[in-house]
Amino acid sequence: MTLINDQAVINWNDFATKALNGEKLTMEEGLAVLRASDRELLPILHAAYRVRHHYYGNKVKLNMILNVKSGFCPEDCGYCSQSIVSDAPIEKYTMLNKEAIVEGAKEAVNRKAGTYCIVASGRGPTERELGEVYDAVKEIKDQYQLKICTCLGILKDGQADKLKEAGVDRYNHNLNTSADHFNKITTTHTYDDRVNTVEEVKVAGISPCSGCIVGMGETHEQLVELAYSLRELDADSIPVNFLNSIKGTPLENLKELTPRYCLKVLALFRFICPEKEIRVSGGREINLGHLQALSLYAANSLFVGDYLTTEGQQVSTDHQMIADLGFEIEEVCV
Image 1 (cartoon, rainbow, N blue to C red):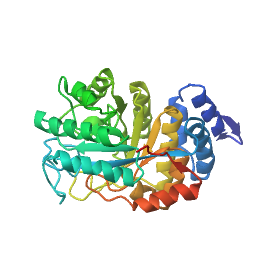
Image 2: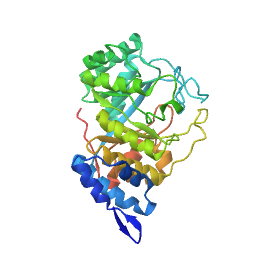
Image 3: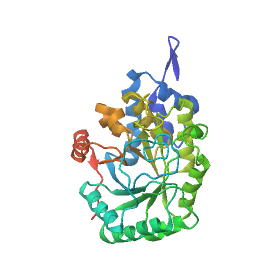
Image 4: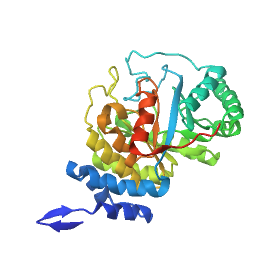
């Protein structure tokens, strides 16, 4: 940083250079990204794109979610429409059968998604539920060259090994927020429970996916700390969700995000976790609005279609957005 007329002037390209050299931004630098004036937004995104392009060019990875078990969750996560403390009017159902899960893989291919995400509500899978996923994944792997990500909650001993045996490539378990903000969002399990599950899947040889939900009342300092934690956790894929404050959840009245701030957050994660897959995820349609396309100058991945209990935008709209940018969908081999 330099001073001109007593005002700090930041060369954002210096941040890109640090990231490409493997150096971590300082707390002061991370806060500078989040607190920058909106007139600095395009220079920040230009610097973030320099890092993104170095690792991923103009390729965009597409992911599709299937909610294979909805509701009936005993956990009290304040953001979630499926939690025990939610009154949101959502569809509830127990674990889908193998055939329905396999059918979802076909739809993922139709949407040009390279990763198929099998997600279930609950604290963690029962052995019966794990068996249903196990059988489905084995069949999917026989039919498609999809990357399979599962998100089934906190795993018991041996369950990660079972998923690896089935052919699961990646396991998602988000940290969601910083360690010192966690108990304001969730009390029925701990931040360390989540870290431990990510570490267990790494030991089993499964690629770790872990990210966050931005806009849950965290401070700027806590968000930078969370980015540091995900860097230290060495998550290969980092989904960055933006709070969709669903009516009937404890956080229904929390609406503190702007599209410009969301873009600065994505740039922050690109600078701190430069070589990782940064995925612009749930809540992007609501929180980024007409600026969604700009998110891909920092992020290199996104979900297509609907989320767990909320709607996404049309798949064809996402495909066109990518084409309009001059970017390319990463090809799916089938």
